[in-house]
Image (cartoon, rainbow, N blue to C red; front, top):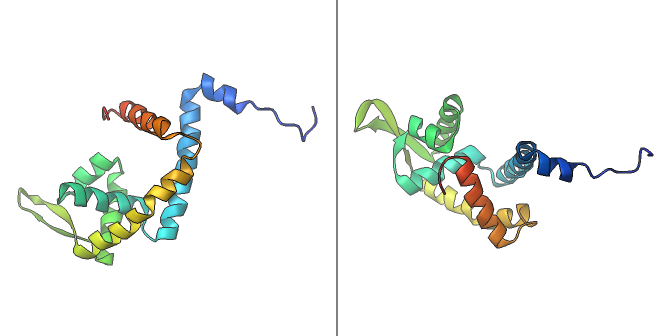
Length: 150
């Protein structure tokens, strides 16, 4: 075998080791998401936090961290950055005075809407190898793996 010939081993490995295949796919999608976020000027974590705040209302950094599966120390930085940009604010949590509730601001809602507008095209490009049905199935399967029952 010459150095220039290719061996198509990864497809076989992917069927034998789903864990490795999922890790590689996850890394590829994460790189694409980070590149897209950089183009949009709103980090992936920032986008997710704003999206959750808009969907469920004010909540603690701990809740954001747990629900979005973002490390707590990273969440502090994300919330600091969002607050500095004027996209979110932290206020004493009326249900627990020991914690702060993070709230999306009107500029945060506007910034999120702008960022959200480009998501469908990004997802179509990133998952173009899958049919719409396969994409739905992938979402369901990933939900099962992550324990959300989606």
